[in-house]
Structure formats: structure tokens, C-alpha cells
Image 1 (cartoon, one colour):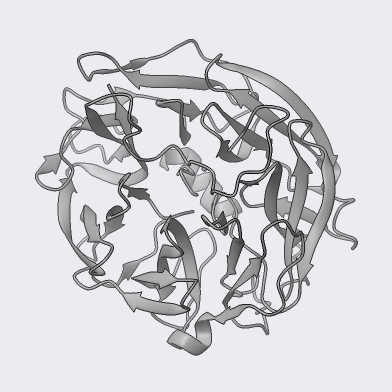
Image 2 (tube, rainbow, N blue to C red; image 1 turned 180 degrees about the vertical axis):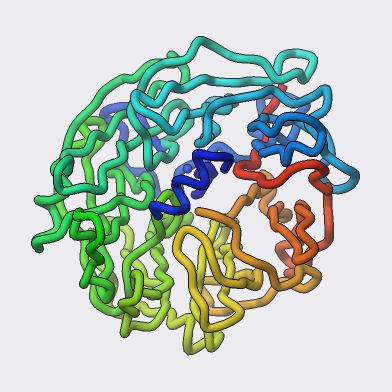
Length: 417
């Protein structure tokens, strides 16, 4: 999941061009990796923490990290509470929020709440990589991957970051032009811990400016070892399209029973449309092949394509489904919110949440520790940004906090203090 980062001048540039580490020697875990969400259990207080972009109406536009105690009502502004940051990507781990600057060397700064609930820097910034993917592993670290989308620089770096010691604990490289088995190269879209492996879904690109991929009817997940972060194999399937989108950090999730589910919009790339149906597919526990007996055809179930998803619990995902024939990549299209049960193969639209334009890159979602309530950021057609509070069991939502003077929200989580 995700809390891919997960706007300003940098975001506009990204739009034009286009949330798991464990100690060595531990055994496979049947449970999905903790994505850093929830209240944990070691403290008694917590605050929501948002990363927002101000619209300049109250002064100079900028990027801020803003804590708030109650996000179910009221108005959120950056006045007097926001901490300005240069980071774009944010990932929660070890009860800290790591802000990664989208630039060469990827300077990374951890933030935390002090004893009074005030947001402060937890340590000095550490250089990492020009980071394009990232995801938590266990409860003490995360893995990031460098930005590589050109055949001229196809050798990418994976690194593991020690969130407790605030340091890069290891690196390895992989040539993304050599793992596809075609003349094109891989562009990775996120990463997820599965047992003692790292799963990295990717799409395909010629890696040459002005050219578009011709491979849109296949699914690929690159598998890497841990802690070595060494490339091992590619898991392939031909029943739907590629997983995820650039800078999306979503598309693959392990459930409590140890199985892994992956989903695809099957929307194609550029003017080339996929001939496959949008669907959810499965990798059974302790296997590294797609289960041919499982195929949840989202198009057959809804008449439309799946956009994005974030895991809740017990096989249930909070997902967006396209409301029209228009699909997007990093952005674009109109969507409706739904609870999708991959165990029962059901789709239940969330009442009280209006159809809306899809936000950039990924869903901005936080799920409470009890898994009964989810929080979803969206921009209404009026142009106003709201947090919607979702009752998972009832598949219903209502307006929560209103973001005043804010043009975009790129991250939502909770920190304890």
C-alpha cells in the first residue's frame, strides 16, 4: 500500500512526463506486511498528519506537513501548524514520517510528533537515491528504488533504509533493460513485501523519447531477494494488462492468508489500448506463479475498469472504478469509490461519496487500526478538497475535514505521541 506520495512545480513536471523490510534470517510471514498505518499500541495519543500544497491564497504557495487531532470535521489550514518541506514522497515507518525529496540523491528527512504533539524533525537529512518507488518492510525499515526510464540509463538502484538508525543499510543494482525478455525496458510502479521477497510490478517502455510501448496486454512482477535486493525472476501473466502506474505505489497486496492479489486497469498506454479486461488476479501463498484458477473480471462485474486500490483487511479493498470509458494513468478520468471483496468477488459502491475526478498518482487513503474506518481524500467538482470518512462495513461515507487554502493533498497517515 500506497503511502506513496502518496504537486507544485515539481508535480506539474512529473505529470507532463508521465508503502516493507525485515531482518535477515527471519522466516516467511503469513500475514501481510504492516504498512505503518494504525495507532500501534505503544502510545495513547495520535494525530492525523497530512502533506498538503497551499494555493497561495494566504501568501506564498508551498508544501507543508500538517498535524490535526480530529479529521472527521472542521477545517484544516496550514496557518500556525504547518511545517514547510521540500519533500514530495512520504512514507510512514517506526512512528516517523520520512520525507523524500524528488531530486538527485533524494535527501530524506524523518519527522515525528514530540511529547506535546508538535511536529518536529526526528533526525538530520540523509542522502539516498533519486527515488521513484518505495514501500515499507516489517516495522523498522523501507525499500526505495531509483528513477530510471531511459535506455541510456537503464541500470537502477534498490536501497534499504534503516528507519530506526536513520541510514541507508544496503544497495543493489539491476539493469531494467535486461529483465523484460524483449527489446523494451521495465519501468517499476511500486514495491511490496511478500514473505522474504520484494515484489515490484512494472510496465514496459522503449526507453526512447517519443516512442510508446507495444506491450500492453501482459502483467509482470519482478521478484527481488531480501536483504540482498538481488533480482531473481519475473512472474508473468497474459490475462490482463500491466499493474499500477508511474509513481503509483499500488497494485499488489498480500492478504492475511498469505495469498497475493494484483490488479490492472488494462487501459493501455498512449493511443494503444489493451485488448484485455481490467481484472484482479492472484498468486497463491508460497508460490511464484499466477493462479490460473482465479480471475476476478472487474469489467464483467461493473461494466467499467478498475482504477486504483488500497487494502483494508480480510480481503476487502477500497478501490476506485472508472465512471466512464475514459481511463487515466498518473491522472485523468472520473471515478466512483467502492469496497471490493477479492475473496467473495463482489463490488459494492460507497454511498455518500460523489463521483469525482481522479487525483494524481495514487489514492490518498488511511485505514484505522481496527479496520472499521477508512479515510479518503478527494476533490469535489466544486474544486474543494475534503476528507471523506468511510464506514467499511456499511460501505458509506460522509464529509470530514475541509482543506482550506489548499490545492492538493498528497499524503495522509497517523503518528503517535
